[in-house]
Length: 280
View 1 (cartoon, one colour):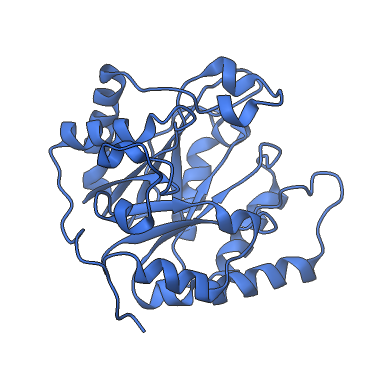
View 2: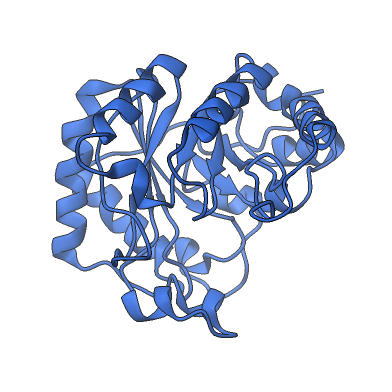
């Protein structure tokens, strides 16, 4: 199975050929999955998750970013207490229960910070991450090239396979000290996740005040989308699902590129119609 989605749901008016922000219900009538980044900043209430579920078809799924405490952001210098970590995991597990119960959680995305480098300590943390989220589908996105060094990356992929964790295949600008290489490797029998950030090298590297508005300002070309089509088709026999998330949306290009890739792959998404009103 191949699925395609976007980051957030409101910022993609071209999905419906308009200019207004989309509701989750409108988005879910076109694409079968959405990535939600709000849990990174603060763990949502269960009531908020219930509202999301009531707005979408029964087979619609969510990818939720792990909370910033869980991904060890802002801990490079100060560290983090075990109590804070365990509290975050406990609250996050409680928030996930309605999605897991109704099979609407595709994965929890751990997008680690660039300083999360390959080390024995961080290998140990990946093991703890899985132990603290038992039965939860997890995908890991590395943003430090040390995980992909020749001679060691195969061992990293094997470690993720042993954990049952999906390796996130990242497309982004890559320079000597910034970004990671494109590594289309499957480590989970259930899910391969591609996250496409665009290839705006200048915007990606510029850490100025408008960095967030520039870093994903990129529109994939027809040739680049055809290259992704080839990769997706190569990965599909290796896992139950290949999910492609477009994050190149600083200029509103993600939705158009997603629909282009969908057409190139010749796929359609069923069960994207009636609003789900009676979950609870």
